[in-house]
Image (cartoon, rainbow, N blue to C red; front, side, top):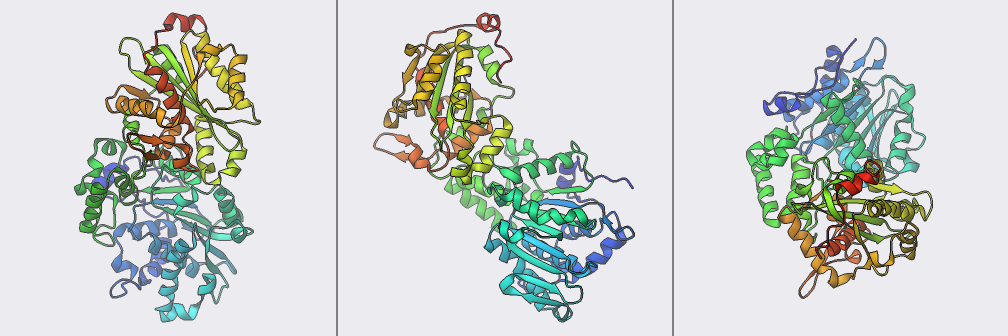
Length: 559
């Protein structure tokens, strides 16, 4: 039997209000599952309607695809993993409760375990309470099921099978042999460095249960996606678009295409319904438009939060109300295809900025060059971290691992490897005849100075850049260059993250960006950038050209 879960024309379908969910592989099995699913009651809705009368057609289609992927003749489920990414208020928790309760009712395996894994206790309650209420207000189900609210546990009296809703904890999920696992709000698991291990423990039993399944339900993250959520979202898009061939994985993602996000059409209220399939059901258009209007009044940070949660738009750069103003202009200045090599190829002079390097810190490197003739500024950055940072800064660990996978950050094996690698890049720039100066915090670690000296960087090429309020000029220069389009960068996730982390402290005549204000969030690559800007704004003399670079044979060695 051949089938596909790819949907490469997903946007045409959404814009035409057609389904992006495939038909069930086994219609008869889907119908039997939906017969139970449709009859479940949404108790907290006016009149306690059934799922059939209260839900939009896509809900029944999604549930049908899950129930209808099971081959009752062989006992095997042909689609074993499902991914639903949908905006807030589209009945996600109710869907979770109804699907898993239906699975428990129709299950044939004795003593089977079903799990809803939630990132927090509150979210766990959001799924358990609707399921418990569906049972309480149905005489037949009340006789069939035993509900233990204090344990968030529902037991089938005849089969002994259970549905347990648990808040994420490796000790709780360890050793489970689940038949079905629903992972709620996957975006929050992306922030937890232990999440892959938890989910591996929860889903390990599926290997010996051919009828087993995993369902991922999530809204979009209000920060740039990270960790297991980022990898799962990327995989789901790959399957949907046909780039990854995996017919056992079904992705259902309600989102705008990149071109509509870039053009601003995604922000038009008349298009909100395209990614909110429950519009007119659990989603009220007037309320949604009012929330958007309030976000516009409150500023870009609130707008981004609205776009992520209510329109499913992925955020590339997170902003807070006290964010650095230049962060608003950072993303649009990405230059496609720009690398360190192409930067050095185009520029006549290069400045290097360095910052950080403590044991619980990042070591940030920024390379900035001035293009011949146009005099546009180009930017590339890198960062280094010792694995101990992953333990000391657990909240940032998933992001750091993502950046390492992307090539923007190097996790060194031992202290000292970071400064050696950094110095080697500076040496290449210097040997190409392009380096003017290296700017760093005067309080920086001596290991950087020693490493630079070891690769032939002269003492007069290293400049201490005053920090604090004295960095205000560089910060303002960076803001203006970005706003006027005269500073282009590589579009690295590392810098989007650092810019989004930057918080400021207003003073009498300046807006200071400090590590203290930013807390545990890392901004070292951005501070290194300001150090490089301090030097480049002095209008250094051109140091080299294309011939110098190519003759030294360094093209292609860094990127």
